[in-house]
Image 1 (cartoon, helix red, strand yellow):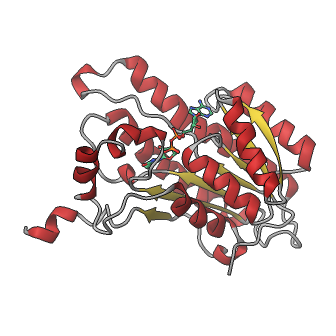
Image 2 (image 1 turned 30 degrees about the vertical axis):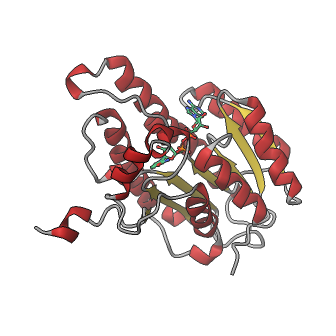
Length: 267
Ligand code: NAD
């Protein structure tokens, strides 16, 4: 059964591209009003909204840097002003600034932490505050609110040359679990989706080069690189009441990348 998010409002961060854009469209398709957060590319954010409207949905484009407290608070205020409340948050915005560990600058460490971890904290806190303020509205959902973190297989898989990114995703997992434990009595569900390799701008250099793409496939037992829609469909379902008893969990959408693929050939 397709996910039903009728009369609910979802805020998706980093929704002008890649996984965030696909999630915003999937949520719109499921009937939700969609707040399309973006950071830089206003044309691409408008394009996300146009695609949602073409499917008969509705939304609002809001520019905000998720790492800035004032901007996050203003974004939630705009969303609540337009649609009355927010029912679902998808914490998707994320970046990479890769380098060898010994060469990693404090600036690159901090920038990744600010966006991937502090940004997720700031958005999650505003969402949880709104869910607690509003409480349960039974005719919309059996939960008072849902938060989905877009994590990564690198919340558990070490990745040389990406220490800032892996540390941010690992930290995000404990943030998600602690929030899930603390907020469950308020009927707020908090979960993560951990994608493997999904074709987006963040890793275009790899999948657009045939040799690098072939090497990447060796790490994916299911033998295909993922599409943003693979993640989006899971997100729409996880946000729906169909998934009501799930909280504090990470769902891996990775074609088996976390199955130690090398062990298929020995060990
Ligand atoms: P992407 O680069 O297309 O998307 C990232 C989005 O985040 C962009 O729209 C960008 O503008 C936005 N963003 C960056 N900094 C921001 C800020 N400060 N405030 C607001 N928005 C900001 O790449 P993607 O692959 O779609 O990445 C989405 C999420 O998925 C990220 O959290 C990433 O870590 C995660 N992820 C991606 C993959 C993959 O293979 N593509 C795998 C695992 C996890």
